[in-house]
Length: 183
Image (cartoon, rainbow, N blue to C red; front, side, top):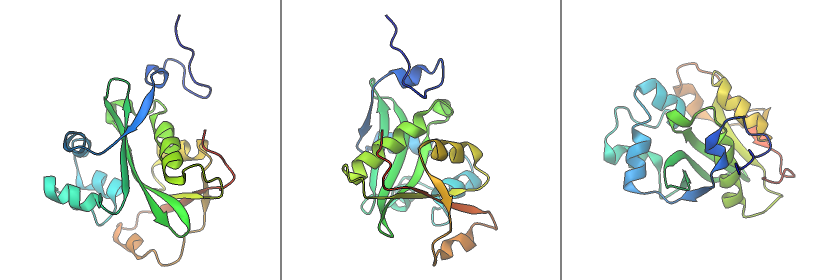
């Protein structure tokens, strides 16, 4: 008998019917992640102005700041890499960064699954912890995903000087309220 889709999943989304898990960073998965980007503009939008392009193996790993951030891959039951994300403490919140879904999995609800799992991992069940993230205003697909996961646009925190190095692109700051338990 087929497994019914998870509530809120898109009809026909086979990816959402399989169990997921967060996986540690490995060299092989980092190589896959690096292959998701093909231009300086894509890397700027995803990694921010501090992320170098073109990158090599060493600069890619350095710019991810793997020692400073909690970094995980979302994988399916067969171990296939579906998504990547990082989290760390920022301004008294759990902050999500460098969220990315494999190009062939975009639009299938994988991003929401990644977010929920990163929040559970980073918050360890602490419902008093808000979650925040930055997103380019032009990234409408990501904004819709974040809004489905309970994030709302709010005023930009003070002292975000890195925004000046984005070539005039508008960045939104979004926060998920503390009282919204991850599903």
